[in-house]
Length: 413
Image 1 (tube, helix red, strand yellow):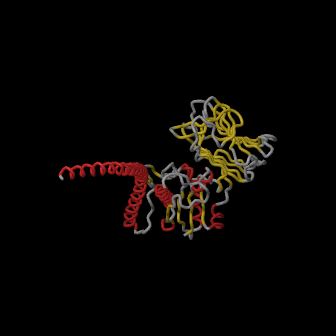
Image 2 (cartoon, helix red, strand yellow; image 1 turned 90 degrees about the horizontal axis):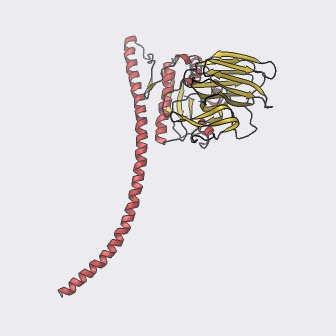
C-alpha cells in the first residue's frame, strides 16, 4: 500500500511539475514584458524629471528674486512712507540678468505681426543644403557653431528664401531679421540684394566684416544713391533687423540704426542673401514677417496685443536685448494710456515637455512683466501667467506655425 501511495505521489508531482513549468513560463513572459514596459516608463519619467528640475531652478530663481524685490520694497517703503517703491534695476531670471541694456534704450525696431518665412534650421543635417532655401549661385550648406546649426554661405554665393508659392512677392510692408556670425580675421563682403517684380536689382545693403563700414545703395537702375554708416564688427553673433514700409527702409545692426532711406522709389518684391570673400558667412534665426500694424491699433481692433518681437534665450526666460523695440512700444502705450492694465501671457510651441513648457512660459511672462515694472510701470497694472503649449493659434507642423505659437500677449484686464 505504501508503494502504491508513493508511486501515486511521484506521478502527481511529475504531472504537476510539468504544468507548473508551463505556467511559470507564461508568467515569466508576462513579467518580462511588464519589466520592459516599466523600465521604459521609468526612463521617460526620469527624463521628464530632469527637465522639470532644471526648470524648477529657473522658477525658484524667479520666485526668490520676487521675494528679494518685495523685501527691498518694504524696506524702502518704511524709509519713504510710499507703498509702491521703485523696483531694483536688475531682475535675475535663471543665471543671467535682464538688466536693461542701455544701448537699446531708444531701440525702435518692431517685427511684423504675421510671420511669412521662418527658418530656425532645426532638424537640418550638417553638410546638407538647407531645405527652405533656393540656390541662385555658389554653394550653401548647414554648418555648426558651438554645437548649434547655422546656414553657411561658402565663398561667392547667392541664396533666396524658398516660399511655398514660387511666384510669391514681398508685401508692401515687411520686416526681416537674422543673426550673423562675424569673424573679422578674413575680409568678407556680405549683403542683402532686393529685386523688383521684374527681377531687376533695385537695392543692396553691404557690410564688411574686416571693418565697420555699412552701406546701402538704392535706385540702381536709374540714379544710384547711397547711405553709409558704421557698425560693431566685434567677433561673435550680431543681430540684423530691417523694416520696409511702402517706400521707407530702416536697417539696424544690434542696437544701432545703420541706414534710414526715406524713399526707395521702387518696392522690393524679392530678397537675396549673398556673401563674397574667402571665408564662410554664417547666419541663423532668419525670419520675414508681414506687417507692422501699430501695436495700439491692434489693441483697439483685437482687445489684446500679440507680439513676436519679445524673444528669449533657448529654454530660458532671459529676454534678448533686441526685444527692447517691442517692450519700449508697450511701455509708451502704457504711459500714454494710464488707465490700461494688462495680463502678460506667455505661450510656447509644442516642442519639448508640456510641464516644462508651462513652467517656462510662466517664467518668461514674469520676466517681461518685471522688465516693464523696472522701466517705471506700476506693478499693480500688470499681472502675468503662462499657457505653455495649450493655446496654439496655428499648426505646429511648420517653422512658421511654431513661430506664430511662440508669442507674448498683452491681454486687457
